[in-house]
Each structure stands twice: as structure tokens, then as C-alpha cells.
Length: 534
Image 1 (spheres, rainbow, N blue to C red):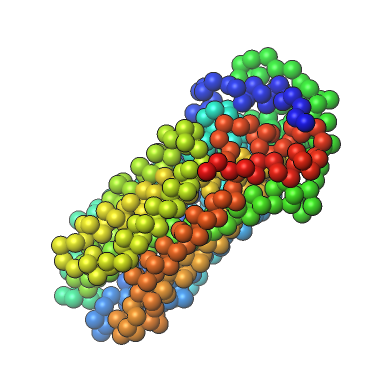
Image 2: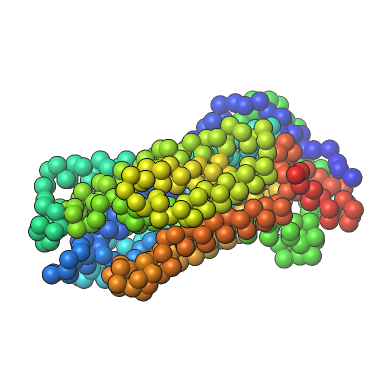
């Protein structure tokens, strides 16, 4: 039997969209803008790092990062992110969302700057220093996932909660886009100032010494938006749901939200104590497994298979575009021209496919629901990846490259108007306040495990099946075509796993988590929220 909602939480659920909602979206969203910029900008400069630090005199092709170095540079931030999601997710439930929120941001600022200042006595020394700072950068980024999602879900009203959380996550699209734009500007500026011949004309002269500043500037730029947001994050009050349901301080929760909502709210300490007594089970308890075990498995596995596909595509766009000859052979360009062309291609994909997909989710998620969007997204990703893979030889022939890019952009559109958004939103809604940040962190960490599989695995898998045609230092792989079949398979598995996740549209957080139940009886607990509209 459900008890009446606490007045302070009911006021939040029924509040009209106000200025503080938009303030919270911007404050949390700028963190995600920075997260995406920092995670994806490295893929724009890895070719440049290879030319600068691993040039082999007499080679017919420009220098490239050795396989183990390339895997580490691309993937180490994800290892840090996974660790940060688990640690800060847990800490957000123990110490409060606000207290931990500033720590993650300062870590991101410091490590963004330090990444650009990576030095060493040898090429491997520079890469080791870069990997060290990118791990800790990822650690800070990891904390932003559960905290931003949880804070936004706990501040939002139930009518437009999905759109508000999606708007925070949609800033990731602008972060990816900005990474491309910043790289375009920096590489164009240096390219116009320091002219250089193509590699095939002058191998040593094709990479000017000043190119070493380019990748450092690009990496350090990520500190700027994070630093600009720090003050406003510290000004945000703690969420009422944490203060009331976890810290059990009804008076403080009522006081904080009275100021935010500009209405008089009564404190209800007695009701807070009653709710707390009925919801004291831990993460590893039988009661949690009975109420939310299937949901946690669903949110974690969906995020895992999604990120294998999503990060494989995003990090290795440059390799796919080179394979279909949309970007010329590296030997026909100088170092800065190659950076410019790679960033131009990624910017076009972000502008045409990535960013629109996020904002379609914002517009429609509270209309058609999370479940339908996630199913549609996984299904269409499967369709478009198969559409790329089956006639792959057609797409790689002259005159058909634009068609490939359009199809490729649609896979990003339906990833973002689909599971890339919903896997972030739903874990912030369906778990109890006391474990919400932790469970979101676990789900997100499963996603980053998928990203690690994608970023390390695709690096090897996408190599040509002919060892002689594979990149220098790499064994033969299964090729881009077969890799796309694997990614389509991951999307199809995600479609099936979506049926483990409940629909959360239009319900209060306490209704979804069962925190308002009088007694956790089996008939009201075990089946609670398990029904999924089809």
C-alpha cells in the first residue's frame, strides 16, 4: 500500500518548468560538454602523435602509434572513467551529490591541462605521461555521469523529467562537435602559418616542429568549460531527495526547496523516518535483488552492448573514412592537413547525425517514452549497420562514398535518438534515492567496459585481413566489413535486453523505486515496475 508523498517531493514533482530547471541543465550539461570533448578529442590527434613521435626514416608511410601505444592512448581514459563511475557513484550516495560534484570538476580541469603538458625524454615517455594524466582525467569524467544524472532527475518534475535529463546528456553532442571545431581552427591556423610539403614529397619536412603544439592546445582546451562551471556547481543546494530520504533531514530539505521553488513547504520529519525504516536494505541484500535486481542487470547490459558499438564507431571514424577513401592516403598529405581533414569529417558527422539525434530525444522522450525510443534506436542501428556491411564493397568504390557517410550518420542519429540517451536516463529514475547514484554508476561502468572492449577490440579487429595491408605493427584483423557485422550483432542483443528495463515515463521517482510503499510485501514489491509496455 502506498503512503502519501512527502510535501517537499510532491512540490518538486508537480512544479512548473522554472528558471532553476534551466540553470541546473546548464550547470550539469557543461560538465557533459567537457566530458565528451575530453574523451573524443584524442581520436582527432592520434595520427598526429604517430607522425611526431614514431616517424621511421625511409618508411613509405608516415609514422603511426604502435598497436599497444595506440590502444593505451585511446582506451586509458575509459579505464579511468569506469573506475570513477563506480567510486564517485558510491561516494555520491554516502556524502551527498553536491559535496562530490565539485571534486570531479576540479580533477577534470587539472588533468586536462596536465595532459597537454605531457613531456618525456623519449616518445614512449611522452605517451606514458599522457596516459597517466588521461587516466585521472577519465576518473573525474566518470564521476560526472552518476552525479549529473542523479542531480537532474532529483530536481526535475515528473512530467518533463526525461527531457531535462536528456538535455544534460545532449550537451555531449555539442562537446563532440566542439572537439571537431576546435581541432579544425587550431590545425588550420598552424597550417596556414607553417606551410609544409606532403609526406611523399618530403617525409621529414611534412611534420613541422610546431605541430607538437597543436595536439597540446587541443587537449588543454577542455579545461576551459569545466573551470567556468565550478562556481555555479558549488552554489547549487543539495537535492531535496538526498537531504530528506538519505540524510533524513526534513527541515533542511524543506528550507532548501522553499527557496528554490519560492513556496512555503512544511517539514515532515516523522514521515521521513517512516520511509527510511521501510527502505534500509543494502545493494547486496535479497530485498534489493527482489525489487531491483532484474532492472540493474537490464540497465547495465543494455549500456554495455551499446557502448561497444557507439565508441567503436566514434573513436575510429578516421580509420573508417580512410578505408572508404573519403580521407586521402596519409602519404599524400602533410601532418597538419591530415588533422584538418580528420576533424572536418568528424565535425560533419557530429553536425548531421550526432547532435540532431540527442535533441530528437529531448523533444520526444516524455511523449513516446523511454522504452519505445530505446527499442527503435537499437533496431535502426542494426538495420543501418547491416546496410553498411552487406554492400560494403559497393560503398568503397569511387562515387559511392557520400552514400556511405549518409548511412553512417544515420547510425549515430539512431544511437543518440535511442539507447545512448535512454541508457543514461533510466538508471537515474528507477532506483531508490539511497542507492540511486551507486546503481547509475554501476550501469555506466558496465557501459564503459563496453567502450573499452570497443576501443581496444576494434583497433585490432578492423585491420585488413591481409597482413601485408594492415597498419604497421598490427596483426591481420577481420576487416571493417566484418567488424560492422559484429557491431550490428551487438545492437540486436541490446534490442532484446531492453525488455528487462521498465518504462519510467510520467511516474514519480518514489513510485518507481517503491520507496512510498507502506510494507515491502511480495505482492507489492517483487512485481513492482516489472511491467513493460510493448
